[in-house]
Length: 411
Picture 1 (cartoon, helix red, strand yellow):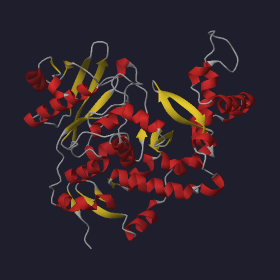
Picture 2 (tube, rainbow, N blue to C red; picture 1 turned 90 degrees about the vertical axis):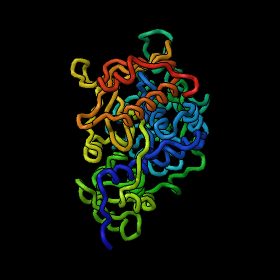
Picture 3 (cartoon, one colour; picture 1 turned 120 degrees about the horizontal axis):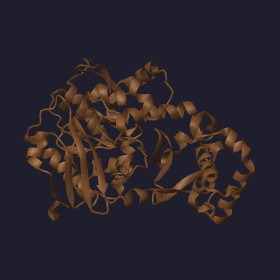
Picture 4 (cartoon, helix red, strand yellow; picture 1 turned 45 degrees about the horizontal axis):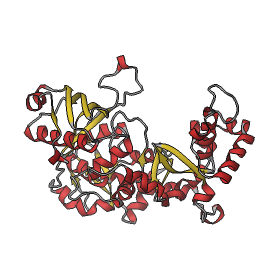
């Protein structure tokens, strides 16, 4: 059987299809779409920066369109989702508890996320905390803030936060909801009453093989070296696994222009004929989060999209090249640029502080219109009534001016 030959554009579009980013949704979103989108991606990274909409909501918006952010919160409360360390701190389907349980039972292997010396030093306080939760119900770290600043004792905020984070990493407590994006913790035994480690625990090797297949499915098309990063796995011997996948029809090798051998997961096989004919089309523009799975592996983004991207919010202001919280811009299957933006919630204004197009991008009317629509949708979703433009390319400024109002009919 001959190896399918694909253009780079076709490979990109297969990846976008797997991620739910190939085409704009054809219908209004429904609450069930939130969990479906996370399942499709396997996991949804959490970040708390809210200079624009927080990252997990933005990742979903890029795929679902204008949806109420409360739907994500509600899915967590209903027990359809859970939080744990996956790529980093992530939402993932509650049914995947079994995949990460072995990490909870060996927290010492989790690096900075778990401090054994802290947990040992404060063992009595931590046992008291667990008893408090058992007797009084779910808690936030803020619930234990001491009324007097600087006061000592285990009721002080900072040590208490460390206790809860350690218990979370060790799987003793789970996040059952977020209030104003603050975690609410309850005992894992109460959240998962039917779980029994002796009966249900999956061996680490088996769990990690499932994680690798989840990664392959969510990537759609991949180089083997991209797989481990998705769940932050240690490098695994992939050659025998790929041979097994090929034998079982889980993935097949393909040859991609400019990259060479890649692998295609079986869920993308229905699109292969179009991809081979180079007729698989990406149709729209979208604003992405810096923590979108499309770009969180910076090396993968460079290899597949020729897009060099670094997050600069932790870089001193004078050393930043593009800005504080820079959002990648997708247009018809190409990462065409990036923008630094801020949502001014008191004045209902989205400020585009700066917008940069890639050096090799020629901004025709399709791109100008596509980005205008994407920015309008992005602003409207966040409740903005107007967009103000700062430093943007002259070709965009000549079409867009200094900004525009968000008309009611665009809602």
